Length: 631
Image (cartoon, rainbow, N blue to C red; front, side, top):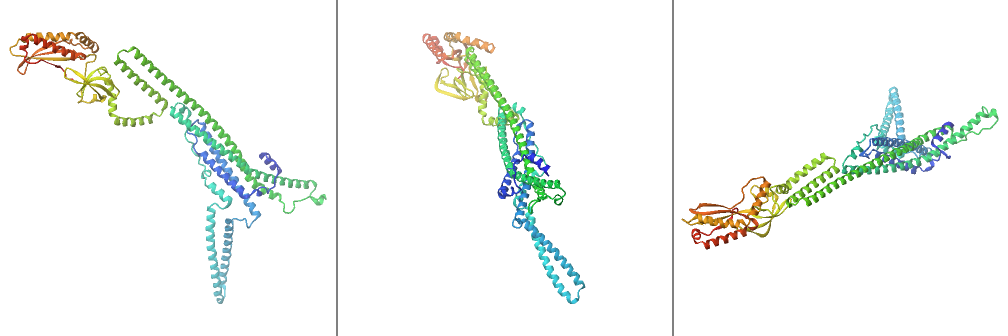
């Protein structure tokens, strides 16, 4: 006994002495509340460890989680084991102090049930004895015996009914888990069936850190947020574990004090027995009076029984404290691992953002160099505009690609989402998309540019601006040979190019001349040769003033289009139209000076008719000057 006490003292590190009655004097109700509060916190801690804490991490994090669950299960098992032992100690203490008053209602019901069973047994024996007497009794006494048997049978039926009722009540009390502290402990334990089974909770799959480091900015940010949540959850677990450790130590302290009191009493009795053995076989032979345990003092057998009951409560608590310390070490190691993973992901995220910014800077810088080079070396305004538009498209496309690949890695989901978005855009923005597509036709080689004169939807005008989705032109109106601004700006969507019923007419690229017609009706029998030569001479004289400019434009057309065409010149034809002879003359005019050339030609023809009576008599009507193509 002394050796066991020494070993237990050395293991638990006990200091100080206390009597075996220390536990009984600590307040039964307060201690019961502390035990139940400790068990509730143990259950809460166990449930928290089962919840998935991490979504991304290293493979060793799964080991930490599994170990945390196993240790929390051991903590719960030790806590319930110690609580049940303490409940037994407290019940035994109450029974020894007040055997009748301290008995619980469930115990009284069980005692009543046993009493009824014994009475039923006695009644059965009495009825059996009466049956034997009736079988051999005098006929005159049979009636009295039968009456007595009926009374005993009625009493037996009553006892059977009482037994059935008490059995139902007792069974309901047992189903409810009993009463008092032991019943509360049983109900708490039954609320966590996982502790009773051996089924292991499968570990949740983790997203590896290597995958997270190679993911996009959004995925890495999501992993960082998850790791921050994991750190918070672990901090809460550590706080709960600290509270559990304090509660377990506080519950163990009075038990250790009571246990040391038992050990001290056992050592004293052992020392007295050893003294008796050294002085002789007994007090008569030695003549020395030995002090034996006084009446009412605990014997070595009672102390041993109390020691076993007390150690059944202390040892699980000590084991719980040791496992709590192991659990704390495991959680701290887990927390350190998460901190390292957080730092690694944060470094990868900052590096990716830095690379994205560098790539965007290179793209923007290249775009600026492109813009400056275009402005400096491309003199043609139309070409310059086209290059600047291409620059914007290229810079925007490359920037979008860099941002897309930098921020997104789940391209399967992105493709599905982009498909729905594209379908919606195609339906809702059909006209705008057609306008954007037509823009690239407009700025093409044979497209329109600022300054071109075009005709579209019966509207003629000079183009003043070409946008991404629409173009603007200054409306012109007037006679066939002279067009003047109306003061209005016509706006057309670029998508008009795809409308079959709306043709677009424009000048040949690089040209600024058009064709006009002169029609002169001749009288019958006139000298048409004389009139033709005279009129052609006047038309040629007016054309000569702009001939060099028009021929230069024509040569530029040949160089650009690689197309051989005849030089523009004044052409004439004699025609029979409506039963009369007429002279038709076609001549080029500069668009900017068309009205001026027509005016000069009109004055020349009027002078010719006024000065030459023969020509005047040969002309049947007033000559007509008009544009070859209206608008």
